[in-house]
Length: 159
Length: 159
DNA sequence: GGACCAACTGTTATGTTATATCCTATCGAT
DNA sequence: ATCGATAGGATATAACATAACAGTTGGTCC
Image 1 (cartoon, rainbow over the protein chains, first blue to last red):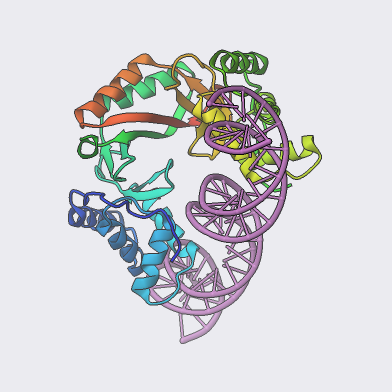
Image 2: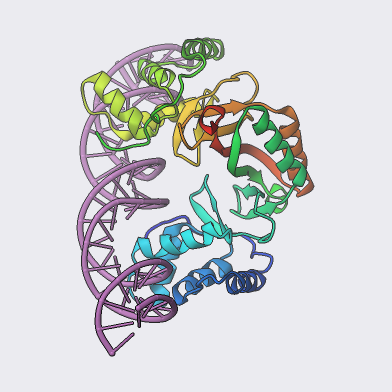
């Protein structure tokens, strides 16, 4: 098994994997999106992971679950589906993927990435969003997608 | 030549490549940093590019300049040097590298990335930084490095 | 029903980005 | 002169991502 972006050692479990799954399921049902068996598998893998996963970590896990080799495009396509609909976000600075809490609110969250335990927390801050929008506007820029990632130590690891 | 993150087609020239070079030179002199011939070459390549460059675009250019193949670690090591000292920033969402304006001010800038022309502008916003710091602190998080990237259309391309 | 189209998945191959490892050269300090 | 520290060369490989094409399924239209 290759050494791909793993869920880091001490990463704490997601607040509520089951809830996230349920939210995605209902959102898909509501919007007529196809939550196929394959996508459901990936959903489960992401939900049950203790932290953000690299695409190849997902590929490895899925291969185990399926009992046969799964090729990269299979997983990347599932990820694309989740990304497109805002169910998952990509952590650009790590090439990793994680469940997006705050499904409703057009996920503009900022990411807090612990460099010790690998944990990834999402925070919402309306003021922050407004400020970003405004700063962009002043520069004549029309933003479309935003990424805010803070790398450092989480509360637990700072101690 | 491989198809690596190029300087995008219409990317406008950097405000002042020469000034940036001079700033880096003087900063290195001041802090006793070794600005070796190799690093100087990479500096020049970055300064003269019309936009952010991928590592392999730098490798290609450097290979041309040197008249012989340059291996990836050579360039990655030079980039690491510049990144460590805040002379260059990495655009995580593009895997590209660009000169860092605002050398003095512990570059906390936000990046405005035009998805049409490829241009990358850096904006400083003290309020934004404060807000981020504060939001992190509220979450018990001690940030260390921050990345703020907005992808969208720049003024010129919006028209 | 049969023709068709769109969405999804499988498969193979390849492209792109980044690092590990080991070795050599240079230079200043002991 | 030796030694350690820093820089760079060379080889190999790891890690991340997409292109291109083929097969399958499920719906729609006639």
